[in-house]
Amino acid sequence: MKMSPEQIAQYKGVYVFAQQVDNEVSGIAFELLGKAKELAAPLNTEVTAVLIGYNVGNLVDKLAEYGADKVIVVDDKELEVYRTEPYAHALSSVINEYKPEIVLVGATAIGRDLGPTVSARVETGLTADCTVLEIGDFPLVAVPGKEQLHNQLLMTRPAFGGNTIATIACPDNRPQMATVRPGVMQKIEPVAGAKAEVINYNPGFTPNNRYVTVKEVVKAVSDVKDIMDAKILVSGGRGVGSPENFKILEELADAIGGQVSCSRAVVDSGWKPKDLQVGQTGKTVRPNVYFAIGISGAIQHVAGMEESDIIVAINKDEDAPIFDVADYGVVGDLNKIVPQLTAAIKAAKAAKASN
Amino acid sequence: MKIIVCIKQVPDTKGGVKFNPDGTLDRGAMLAIMNPDDKAGLEAALRLKDQYGAEVTVLTMGLPKATDVLREALAMGADKGVLVTDRVLGGADTWATSTTIAGAIRNLEYDLIITGRQAIDGDTAQVGPQIAEHLGIPVISYAQEIKVDGDKVTVKRQYDDRYHMVEAQMPCLITALSELNDPRYMTPGGIFDACEAEITTWGRADLKDVEDGNLGLNGSPTKIAKASDKVRKGAGEKVVPESPEDAVAYIVGKLDEKHVI
Image (tube, rainbow over all chains, first blue to last red; front, side, top):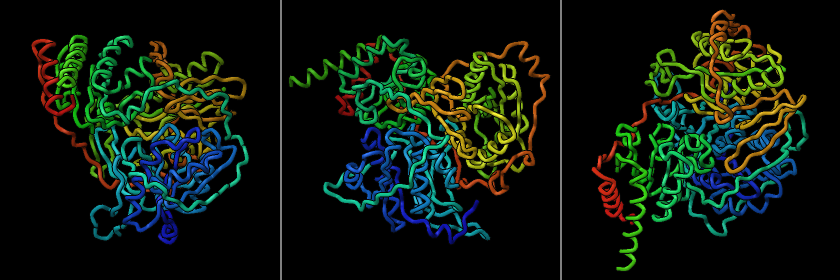
């Protein structure tokens, strides 16, 4: 299934799957556009957002403001709610029609379903959960007797629960596809009034055996802000002991102006909802301060928070691996320390306010 | 009902990591377990078997020692085990892995295929949806609940801030989250029978409708340019305070120093 150099040469441009849910563009789409702009520069090419949904035309300008030069809109009633088949058909048809050299997809619960389906359909490789994307040579260093390809997408990702990192290329197939988790790439400062060229494209949607029926959509009732936007996170693990005991973390978060997040163990136990989970299968966060309270620090958790500016860990187990990444580690009983810390922070803030 | 569960033998992430000279993982040198999401998928299949009656076939691709996870699955209650193993299949990325497994599945009858969402070694979550794509059947990823009614299956499908109740026509493929259930233990009788059970072994020649160019390292579109152990940020300070008061004073002092409060 390798492509010839002539076939590969037909593929141009950096494309981003501009995920929207309920006609609202997901933050990941803006982050990917920021990265796409960086990648497009050395390739001397344009950034195209692929917007798929129903009645989504009003979202085009926003994509332009965040860096899209062009927006391809696939708008159809069948695309109202995310389903694998019509979305995979839409994105693969766009790829086959417009032949992009790079396609970036968010590693969200949608993108991690859509990406593999589309990559299999258009017969190319897909690298999951990339943390670094850059343009470079493959092989990285020239090998005698083997052609070194230039302007390749080099995709770096953690594997093995974060124990290893690998840099991957897709030299013989196009497009080069990658998924990126939310929070990893930076969006650009939006350019007010920016406009993109809009292309409306509809490949036709005929329901078949692969069209599933969505019987019910149940949204998690949550007035909580996204933990990825928090400056300070007070994160609890299994060591917190019970869902009720998260109250002391919430009080600390209130006192210091932060938000509560948690580890996977807490979500698995049903103590907290999934959207508060930090880690490899949750969200990647990089707040100014991350409190890891009663979190042992499994490598999968650390992978989602190690870029935080300051990490404070409180754990009774002196050998907990969280202390290997913490800037300030405190061995002790969280039940005693956390409430007193809350009181002390309130007092310190009150003292400063009165000065 | 016939159910195929795809399982993977994975290196236990708690063990050490070993590489081959070409940068691929040296799986032979590491401790191996059944991938947790796959085990949840197997448990889901066994519950459907308990509830409605079903024949459960477990299928794995790997080195001959991957037979161990097939026997574990049989001891938990699966009916048949299939090992797909061949030297030419080695070094496969997710594309080549999914074409291989689809090629094996084309030899089998099925109403439902269940895979884990992702394996703990690669964490890609790609192989399940790609198998469905190669077979031309619907995929429902991230299953939190599975119910069967006639020739339809209803799945609670998890998203980031919501879930969908999704109904699909069988045959279809479902990827299971480990939150789906708590897998059962092997039974003593099951272990005894599993040791005796015959495992079907298939090689390259047994794969149906698969081209050589889509198999193994050579058939993998993604190539490893470089692999290495991750260099982590070093540990900072660790203190063991005498009292909670001392602990609080230490933390407040550091936060103040960094102008957090």
